[in-house]
Image 1: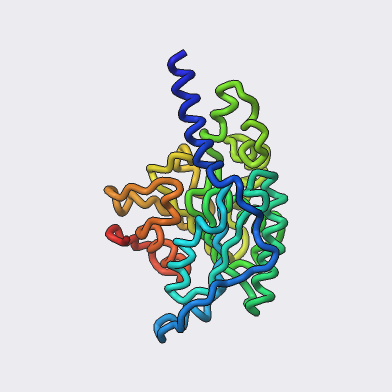
Image 2: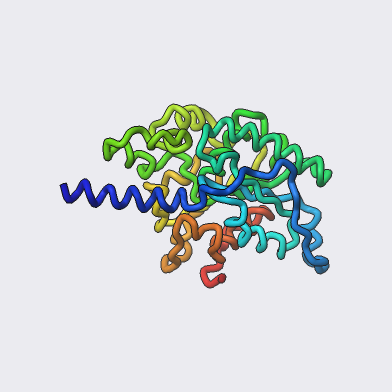
Length: 266
C-alpha cells in the first residue's frame, strides 16, 4: 500500500509538471520572428543561415521557450517558436502535419530553402515524424532534440501501472509509452533519414525521460549526454531549454561543429 501511494505521488508530480501550463492557446497561425538588434559582423553567418524553429513539448506554451530563443537571436539566428497544437495533448502525427504547414510558412516568409529545428521533449517526436513520414527532409537542414523520448519513457507508463487507465486518455502520452504502436512505426528502419544532420541532447537528471538512453537515436546521429563531458552539471528535463551548457551543444550543432560542451556556461 505504501509503495502504491508513493508511486501515485510521483505520477501526480510528473503530471503537474506536464500540465502546469494547460491554459495556454494553440500556436499562432502565422510565424512571427521577434526582431533582433543589428548584428555585429561576426554574427553575419548566423543571420544568413537557415531560420531556426524552436519546437515546444507537451503542455509547453510558447513563452516557456523564450530563454533558448533569446540565446539564438543573440547569436544572430532568425528564430521562431512553434507551440504544439492543443499543447501537444493530441495525436502526434496530426501535430506533425500541422508542423509541416508551419515550416512552409516560415520558409515562405523568410525566403529560406530550409530551416533548422531545435525541439524539446515531445516536439522532437513531432519533428522527427515530419522528417521521416511526411517528406520533411527536403526542408530541414539540422535537427536537434532536447530530452525527447525517442524510444519512449517509463513515465508515460506510470498511470497505467497505477490502474488509472491508459495515460488518463491523453493520446500523446499513450504514444510516448515504451512499446507503443506509434513508436514502433517511427523507429522502424532508419532513425535518421535524408541529408539532415541529427543531434540529440540528453541528461542523466531527466525526470520525465526514463531511461535516459531512450533520448538517443541510431544510424549516424550525434548523441550527446551532458554529463559525459560535464559530470557535475545538474540539468533536469525542463532545464534543457534554460541551461547554458546545453545551449553550447545546440550552438555547435547548428554550425556543424564538434561537440565541445562548455561546462561552466551560464
